[in-house]
Length: 246
Image (cartoon, rainbow, N blue to C red; front, side, top):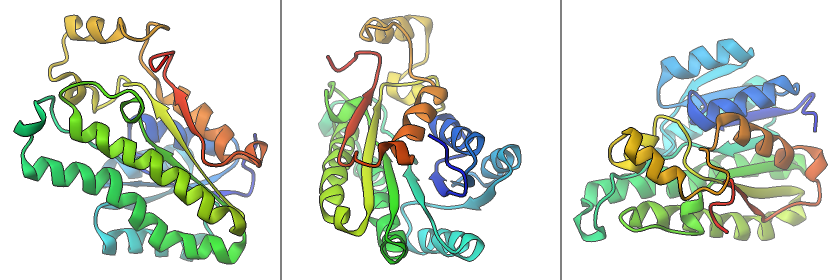
């Protein structure tokens, strides 16, 4: 599952699951661009893994275009794209989520996949190869109440993964997704509503393996799906969730 001589962009790569994926890729030989809306976090992680840092707003077309241009200028190609950047709204009844929060969740979690495809798939087609990984969620498979629009955005991402896989396969481009359960990342407090020992225990009770997903878990799964070892794997939404969706 080596990535020697491969180039990879990881959005939301400055922290959490994205940082775990960036570290795993770099450890296996890839040149990594750490792209994040937090420029400081991107720079720190890029320095750690010997990669490139790029500030990007994945919901903004001009910003995504600039990210793609920077990567292509630096490397001449992009072998791997990881759409990891994501947000959620606070737990609430579906009718109480504000329109602003709805728009932001769909822009960051769904529109971003369209924008990165728009600006990077043409170069992958020219190269005749590529791997795209969308970081979805167990919420898109087994939704729970009060995160309705977040659940829907991740379900969208899973469907987008499958339809992208079918369309892009003839061009040598594979598209897969991973579906983590919640992890001890900056988003955890927003998933739980409040980060207390009691809320953590209640959530962990729903995971048969009894722990949260870790950045290392996501890094290992991403490494497989984006490597040549998974050369016949496309359109998969892999659950990396300790049994949560069973």
